[in-house]
Image (cartoon, rainbow, N blue to C red; front, side):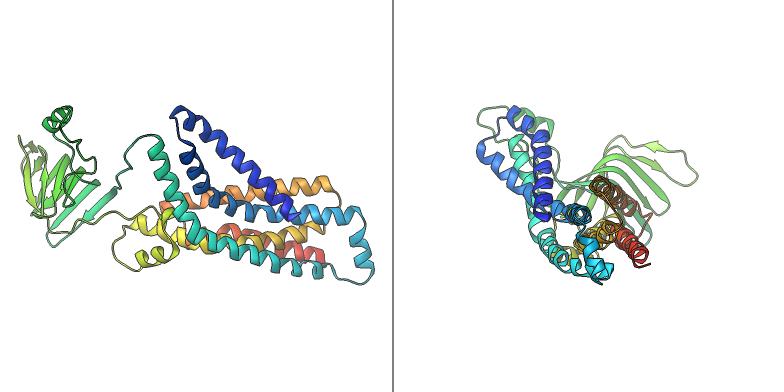
Length: 357
């Protein structure tokens, strides 16, 4: 039953992935090599979901078959306690969880990174430049804030025009220097004076911020807009933004969390991602406990199939809701990662108590 459930869920997810991406691949004339690379890049993610979700499918339908054939009645008549049929199921699915843990922490992150890079190639686009949002730096007596920091500087109008000539090099979309970054939504406060601007440039080599036509607000004066750029000293180091948490291995997540380079939101996302990679592989055990206890109470196969749908739907609702709450800071990230598994453990213990009565 587990093999059948695994095959069914793999087929459904592969079909869903193909239906959502095949049209785009054909429209952008993706090569067979690109198509195969994209498929094998997303396959570890599909496998991980299927490994977990096949557990309630196997147990509930398997126990319903035993119920229908009166095998459970024969076992109970022979003096076997109902819960004695539950505990042995936890071991094989603990092994499933171990495989899911290894896959989620090593294979899946690299696959997701390769998936994105492959589609950037199919779309004939440069890879997305990583950005840092809500940057804040507060040295003594000052405050520096930028809504977004993007590495590199935009090409000037003249360079764009010149690049159309046959012999002119194409401007580098990532910028001309690793020491430069674009600023958006800028606010600087120094000595009681507040400077705000829509955009600016961070020169880490010169240790300056240059604001484009900023508004200047001084104590006791009306705000005024400066006609040209304004350069202010800024002594912080320009660091590349951290990689997306889902594309980072467990070791890299732990290393990043032990350092000071993450913002509050980035720290929450990294904490949640690391905790979920330990919590999600525990889900097969929680599913096995809850599904086995429920399966001993269900008397027909139709009810078992309905229970499978309820299990998967309930897990999915928790699985997509908790990351959003953790990212917003409404729920502790570690707790949010463990909530889906804990809910099914509590459900399983409650059902086991009911079976044992």
